Amino acid sequence: MKNIATKFCKSLTIAGLLVAGSATATLASSVDKVHFLIPGGAGGGWDGTARGVGEALKNSNLVKETSFENMSGGGGGKAIAYLIETAKKQQDTLMVNSTPIVIRSLQGVFPQSFRDLTLVSSVVADYGALVVKTDSKYKSWADVKAEFDKNPRKVKIAGGSSRGSMDHLVAAQVFKAAGGNPISVRYVAYDAGGKALAGLLTGEVDVLSTGLGEVLEKHKRGEVRIIGITSNEDIEGIPSFKSMGVDAYFANWRGFFGAPNLPQEKVDAFAATLGKMYDTKEWEDVRKRNGWTNLYQPKEEFNTFLEKQEKIISSLMKEMGFL
Image 1 (cartoon, rainbow, N blue to C red):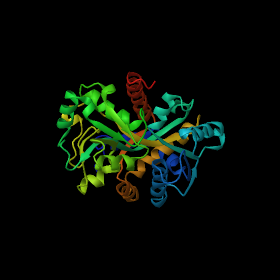
Image 2: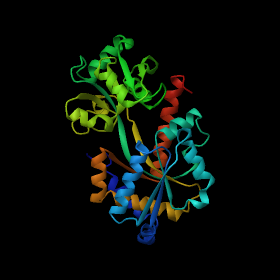
Image 3: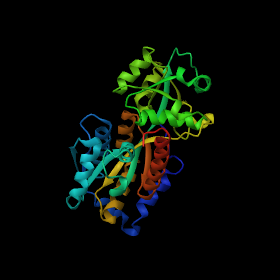
Image 4: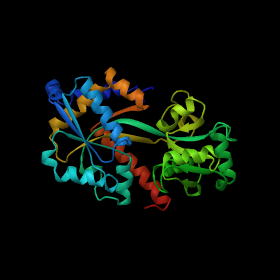
């Protein structure tokens, strides 16, 4: 899959490698081991990302030793609190997280935010996608928007999570960017992505809001049709909303955080090592296997990205009455 950062990934990688000047090579090699802290159970998106990155780093000899620790609880809050409370012992730890750290912090699920941690780098992104059945009366985004403009209650949109969560917010953001009222989105909540997909295929709902990675292979096999994605550009022939005149960008990033007050040399070394990973065959094998899109944003770039995402999500949640 095309790297969404094609135009600037190399420059960012070089920037990450040059942060520490002539000592960069020494710093990068100083990452002998990484302990991955995973705020959820085995088999989830966080778990898969941490283990996939660990696999690539070790198999490409960028690090010598990797270990993994699953710590579920509190919507990810338990692991965040643990990382903060034991910071002095966590010099070799990277905690994986994603967009929910922004959403759940805003909701008060836990008192911390990404600002209480040391930002290292985002690694991959999964864009939002709106999906219909292959035999749906909606052949395109334009068809869905036209129906929504006439009567938004007629367009039932499914998601595999509760109201006010990511699937709901992504759909609302798209319709808002297209000039619609996000509060008018008729969202039907399912308790898992698979159930939401089943609801689409049985005709209970008209459109599915989900992650691109969840439906890309199904789209390729002709089982569903993706009518738009929230990336900056088309991916594998699938139109982005931006290319259709709708300024709706959303990336469910996944990335890594260190403990608070992690020494700058360690942060630079982590970021540089992750940057080098993108040039390895071992990483490309992992990325393709999981259907991920590269999103390398080290340190300051990562912080700027998160601040912007927080602002957009907060505004939308307030408008919809979820904050």
